[in-house]
Image: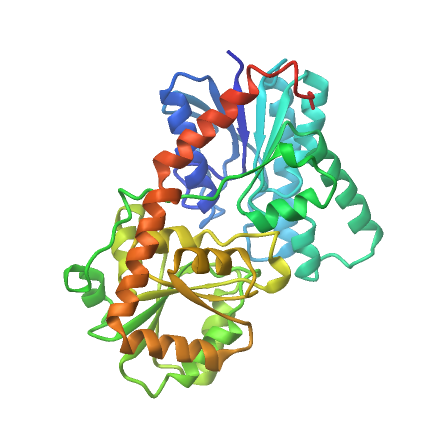
Length: 413
């Protein structure tokens, strides 16, 4: 049976969301008896200087950790060097591993690794699956890193589009992303929407009176609005912080920010400048405490810059839903998360800049605990029906198995 080779910069035991999702799929396939290989870096997401072992095993899979620079996420130049060196060494390892009819599954960290994976597939007669977590270079344009209508944008987009069109399958995180990729001329039959997921056995609702973190973090009986995960450049924080300022005089409402990321220090600086005393900061929590951490809030914030719709889908939503908490989304009213909140009746949306509206939503939920609990129950029901880990893994098994018997019908890369 053909081998399955995954490529992503981060892998278990790393806490990066892409690493955790990949570990779930690799474990499932390995225990099902498939020959699985993972090409990853020796770098850790939260501590780039902490090197990981070069090679190892994980639930029957072989893990190949290749060398790269380890500057981390603090600066764009250092990150670019990390990307470039990993791409070089990962490509060499792909060339050594991949054979005829093998399946290469390329995630999107680093950006455009699928371009090199497509070239390897063409040389080796392997098949390419793109597991698209974010769409580059569109993200870089929206962040101002690449100029619109520039030669660099044209060249990178052209290479990216070739890798998408030649892939046997492109797995996207939502309908908006699928629509965007189809608009690039990719056959819709080669696009599959597979939402991210959560371990719904690990993350379960914890009643506030039974949650030790609420006491440890001094949250008391307040209505707590949480933000958990990456404080990244694609997220919108100005509206959230202005809403916190508007609610500062309400002792019954507090904000809990848990996580790290490129914009965390900027957020903390704004909190100091505004003198906001209603925000508590905490670091990432270990996986075994995730249910308590997510349940420490009564409702959670998710934000995304509108230009990022179709390029990124915030994975925070799935953990929030599993914890049985409603989501307060700040972003495009027709965005992926806004659509899911409307579909499942498990949250409320506000446009960027509408801090008054966001503050009003928070007040409304704080004053209506039954409505807040109803949304939370709807969120958990959606998790059990659509976003639970066993459902996602069964889908991935079927997707990859479906590629194998149809090799004669699918284009090789």
